[in-house]
Amino acid sequence: AQSVTQLGSHVSVSEGALVLLRCNYSSSVPPYLFWYVQYPNQGLQLLLKYTSAATLVKGINGFEAEFKKSETSFHLTKPSAHMSDAAEYFCAVRAGGGSEKLVFGKGTKLTVNP
Amino acid sequence: NAGVTQTPKFQVLKTGQSMTLQCAQDMNHEYMSWYRQDPGMGLRLIHYSVGAGITDQGEVPNGYNVSRSTTEDFPLRLLSAAPSQTSVYFCASRGNRGTNTGELFFGEGSRLTVL
Image (tube, rainbow over all chains, first blue to last red; front, side):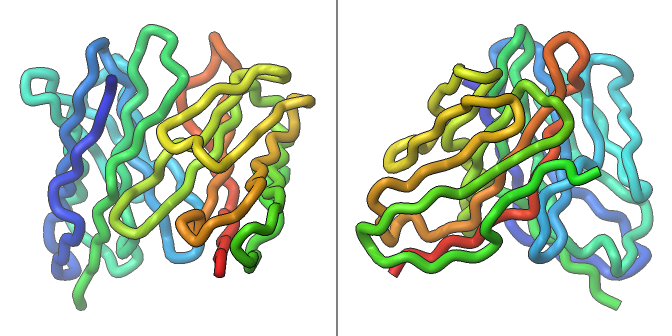
């Protein structure tokens, strides 16, 4: 069964610093991978997704993620953090081959300090 | 364009009471699902449906029932609420087979407190 591990439940960066949020997955078949963002008191919205095309995926708000099969990783990065990036971020995996279930990690809360 | 609409947004129940969380989507999505979100636990799948008349269990189905009589609606029923069901509940839907990219569209959530 597929699973997701997000390393670090809280990450704190300074404004303008690099953002790196880590995600490792487990899947028995080639996966679809996603990053979602949740702002306070809101639902989740999609940041970016990997669906077996390019391994480097660009998303909204300057975020990107790289799929590394050898490392079973899909880390999320942004070169320069903005205050508005403060939110909780969730990595999710959907096993390919017609699987319907989307499994989420436990989330990483990003704090951006001025 | 409403997307995924959940009602109510807030609800307080007493232990043993029943209630239904409503979810409706206007995107003609075949797939609909319910998640619960608890601090430090991420989102956990309760039940999901791949079309009208078809439902299946997720990771944490106990204490919850669902049905899917129409494409648009996917209500979640708590038959006898327990304090352990205090949580924020999210409904999410996804596009149709063959065209979907796996992206889930989420409602704004329903915050349930069971006393």
